[in-house]
Image 1 (cartoon, one colour):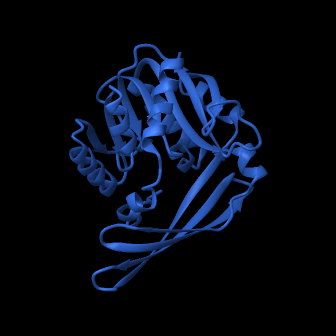
Image 2 (cartoon, rainbow, N blue to C red; image 1 turned 30 degrees about the horizontal axis):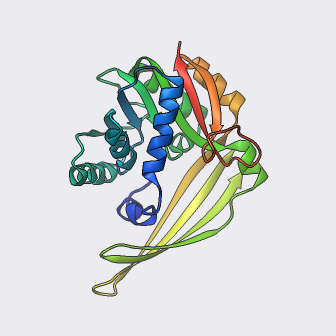
Image 3 (tube, helix red, strand yellow; image 1 turned 90 degrees about the vertical axis):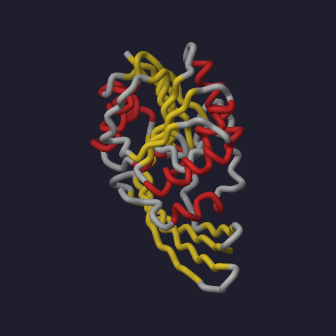
Length: 251
């Protein structure tokens, strides 16, 4: 499950328009709605640290872990640039052994959908349970009813930063027996100063989930599912919900 190798460098450019501040406020709303006196938060699969920075601005004491060393390097630099005091560590969320206890575990931008096998998702959930005293586990996933109602299609996106102009093509392949979508990313990067080009090919394996199976995995890991909500509207999910937040509490 090694992804975001070379692609990690271009991650910020392709998601420069992602509204991390708004998503941070969503997480804040949900933690306050379903939790109590939550201040210490660990982010499973923190990527470049942008969500952690926004949560830090809202008063949370944040820690972030990610299995990509390059992502963690970028997260540390982003945090430094923003003047945020956040600890970032390289670790796999399936095998992470927490050295501290937290009030909440969050996992955003579909990190849990990268846990393709049943044992993968159980291992990640059990690690999250170890990280909590008594608290809230908040994560989002690709939501099965929405994915099957509106299957993924080929998408093209352009981006640039100070050094590169880039074009990304995302080509999906669905697998009905595993509920996994293979998303092949083809990225062409052109260095502005020299005109040199680089082609990157990575395939990200994304599992879409249904509420009953997640409820079972959570129960097996020491959680009770409280609710699931549409990520865009923070309301009831339906067949138009491509992504969903799930909120669980420790038992």
